[in-house]
Image (cartoon, each protein chain N blue to C red):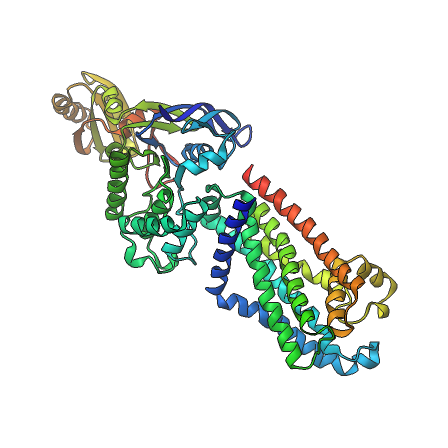
Length: 324
Length: 254
């Protein structure tokens, strides 16, 4: 059975601002699904529609078998959500916050107390449980937010960029817990992220979104294999001067399927990458183009993203990095 | 319905806990009306009898201090909601199965309870300094309940602005709106000494009737007509402000 379905789902804020422009999704129950894309690509708007916070302009959406526009109340009872900003009340303690959450989800009072304690233990916040949330670090807040999303044993959990801004250790903690819940209890996770590594390591399946549309869909392995080539990256010595010339000469490389420029580098998709490196060096030497480094990698999700959109997915900027 | 009331209760408790953890906010809410209360009585009290026939100016001013304090408390309902919106906590609450009305009603009820507490402090202070209370202990309780009810009604203004705009600056306008209403009422002198245009504005101002109802409980004794006028004004005020709040809530969650 599908846990999440979307069919031609759209959210147009104005005629020009088409945050989500007709997406189709089908996430099976028990899957850990990642929604990948740069800031502004429409990931959060999609989550807000699927979690009933935002009404779609048109199209159909379904969560746990329920129509998002017709049964929002029932959907809210069945889903857990941690939004992009850890939505917490700084003047409550961690325990009070979880207990209020439990009461609003209509759990019996004794279960509320037990479950809050158990979750505080799981997210390693039991020692800080009776401190005001305002004294928590960013990582602690994220963990508490995750615990709040899980307070009522939801069947489907939406996590909107759950690890953005976290240090690597906190990020690992959250990943481990998400994976454990998914494997042990079969909870379906719909995770948006701009961290490629996160999607690559966690997701069974993922969709790449850009400018309101899904541009690729599949498992991380399938998507990377779809590139069908190795990736040779050349760091140019003076990229602003030599980049266009480098692209021109490297197009003659035997086996190259595509040559693209990024900010300070040239990316070559080529069959038999290890053999091609020597030829790349030779071609650049002959053309008298100075370079710092030539490296060979297997395709990453970033390469998939570049191939589908013409942009790098960057983690620190609001806009995708332009690729020539 | 029952479920909505239970959810409102939990959210009211949260609102009260929030208030207890920020005592500085409550101190400001009580200090300003008490200061104006003391200064006004000190400045005009001795001449009020001669100037406009009010012998017990302390008792005359006490309801003004109550309404100022209540409006201060209720004005902050909007600020609390804006803070929740800015922190993303309001979305968290919207994602629970709690009826959306409870999310607003819980906080407004907390403001009603806070308003009752401040009203009690002002009334007890007035009694200590000799305001008297013609209707006795029952009158004291009635004024406290009216303070709470007016707080609940007035909180709707700040709440609707907060939900509509999500802006802290705009939400504070809820409290500022109270001053024109207060000055267009017989807050500092009886309506009879007003210029005709001001008397007309005071007559159509609901604050006039709330003030008069409380004032009669302090100075005159039981006057059913005055009391019903006050209660009807509070109810009318609540109907308008809560309707605005619901409309704002609907537009935010559309």
